[in-house]
Image 1: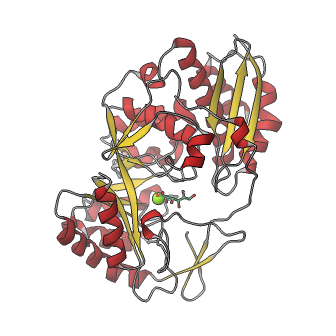
Image 2: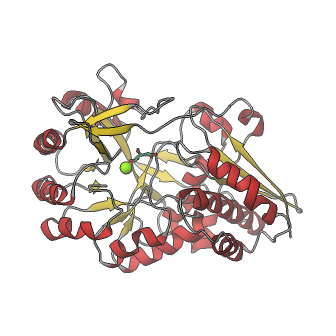
Length: 407
Ligand code: GCO
Ligand code: MG
């Protein structure tokens, strides 16, 4: 069996999805996702100019060897662009392999460990009342785990993941400007107000609800340790990205002062970015995505290392991931003995479902993986022709005195 061709498509409804389609001499094709949010043209070009020419003629069943070929032959290893490109190829090869075998990818990994995978939704509010309204909406939709982001009184700009006053907080998705928007961040105001938010939410929703919160890399290690200690009584399911995780050892301080579960990893692209924090058991959930994390082959390796160290999965599921990588993660989630939770936002719009037809679905707080052979997602090229690339940027963040900070 041979790979005969591969094509890259960029575009989608409101998103620049980077979709790879690999064709074989037996009529079977595979699909992969290389959507590197706000840098989408780079993995697309990398695939077209460098990887696809080598891929033609290879045997698609040899997914491990092909992964190693691209990882080792790149010479300048890792990085989000390289790993997104390799990841897309890897997903497409698992898709092909499943289709050859007539089995869903989860069966190739070791079979289902569960029927539905716990997911969390995003609730947001420019203030506490709007946040509570947004949370009530998701409770009604059956969610038992909700991430909460709340506007902070006096904060100069709304902040990460927070709807403006007049926006629809129930369906809020971060918008990216044609040039970077500016956010102003005040750590003191955040640290003083956020514990009060959790206190009110517990009083409002009781003890059962799983409450998650994303700090989005904004705190220093000492601040994060103090904050984690202070919010301990409110029993968070996780505290995400309390500090930028470039320095893995800074997490030790948080661990020494608090038992709040820590979730990190959405900006990682390899095992080497999280090896120390997993081995030292400094985190509780690993958030790497199949897209930037080198696909199923590499993420599976991370999941296995994590399992030995009591770290569970909590894969990234921002809307920038196409339904293809969400499917890749759904198969990992179905199999992983150390599955924790899945972030869930991407599927469900009519335009997105038309572009990526599938029977993966959400029901009652859980994600149900497709039982179709391969990844269980298709790609409609006619629909794809409707969309064009449009450049976007993540916001930039400055402190109140103008100092650059972390988005
Ligand atoms: C999350 C993330 C995202 C990121 C985005 C950046 O937890 O979902 O923090 O919202 O900001 O994926 O590209
Ligand atoms: Mg996050």
